[in-house]
Length: 172
Image (cartoon, rainbow, N blue to C red; front, side, top):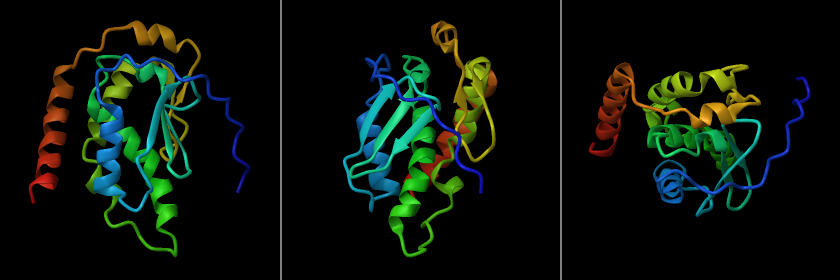
């Protein structure tokens, strides 16, 4: 297995421009899907290499890239990225080779919407290496940050599908 590529150091945390309660969102995700992780989880927004990174620890630190720090970034994007970042940490924390209780697709039906939104609104400033890694954010992302982020008609349908799947999970 090749050695991991060196990563750029994370910049200082940024002021939050999103109107979403990110701490509460991450804590709700931890309690619902990864209750064995110590909490409450810490959250931040900073300039870094990837869209989301998770520093394991007790409690873990979840950091989103500053390009997402925008009032029009949907909650589904933050939620899907949080779940993806926490998944390997949670799998390791279960220990003893125990399998995760649900497949990832079952706990993250909003992933398709989130990926489509990221590709539509941030595609010019991200680079996807492989499906197993979060996209890297390229230099010059600030221009993309300034662009408006309206919800395209096709994404409205994907959001409705994700909402329906989440409702089925919540009200079983």
